Image (cartoon, rainbow, N blue to C red):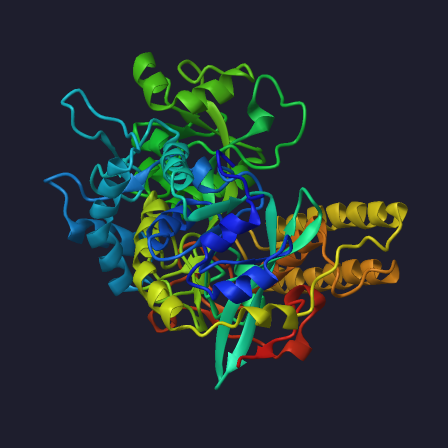
Length: 576
């Protein structure tokens, strides 16, 4: 958490929240209720970049469930795509994005991102982010699948880590921003007025102190499709789950890892962009059989091609070979990948890398406008949580960090305007019932619940991989819907039979609620799309249909129809 701890003296917190009534604040501020002008959920590139701008206008809390640097941004290897070369153009970047997105992209969103992107990258450089340069002193621009030009700004194969470092350093030097690490967001706090929904803050679990901490604010931004859905935000395009085509396959490593990885180790698309070739285990190159663009085809094409090879040949991985390139070039461009493979006995400068597709990125999410706004007033989204229309049915490589930067910046002015206009009464905070930690349950009961939750999580992952994976069918999707419903009912009944209350919270239980919520959204969206487009391929409707070229939209459901996992823990209040 750097130099600034979340355990800040109360008088400092009061000093930095001057935009909210100070007299009321001093009376109500305590360890479990905190007041800020802006609350940011998530410490990835979108959250940090947004916080650095709005902090000029008010107090900001950033809450994140692990250490601040533990975000998807930190694991982004490839880079940021932007038009920075004279031979490139915004129109070309737009066309590549729309083609990769299977023509489902929102053209205005694409235009905004591709036009404003270069300036956002230059801002990162001005803030101290260090990117690779060529021998001529200019930025080294890489090329990845789906791109017609070299336009990927990168820092070796650890671009996300470098961007996160630069942004966290800037945040640490900003006296108006407070980082609250190890705080797990439970649910958004909402109220209704004149038919409009308003977001007033978020409840969280402080993992270290095991307390429920309530953050009250005029504006909330950040990540969390499930918590946004429970707050009645509109959700879109959840069927488009991107599978990274080349995750490291532990099965093919000379030395097997001692334990199962929690997260797949990804082999960046830049390896294929630099000339990497895909072979099956008989060392037969197969991509030319599937697409004229060969290894530079978009991710969905490459992932399906690998999946087809694995099923036809009964193998568990394919091989990605970059060893024909000069050793020095490989090690300078991909030091992180080289080091990871070497610890398991694989030298990528001499041997091919065993790879397999892995679920990687959600192209859908909370439906957002061009300013990151949602249908819930005061709730803005940017980054992977958002569905801005940029990605359409498939994300173009390295467009995700760019989208996060652009929309985080675009959300700034409207959220400042909302903060100034909002009439927030801090005493409103006590009117939402507080979630409870399960202190009343015996240790043996809690252990049983945690063990059951771990088992249920693995079963849900297995169902999603088997029935909602790279190639789908209506029958398998309906099977998944049924199995997920049964799993969810069984898990919830198990908890409640052992004394768990609907208002109780714990990290494992909250994560499980979110997983069930998102799994159901994915399956519901996939069943609604009766065509194959981009990342969604179904054997029953294997072709594109022009009449179906529109986004899938899920509107809020009536609360009484929902399971515990899909309901907010707090009832919705009437705003004053």
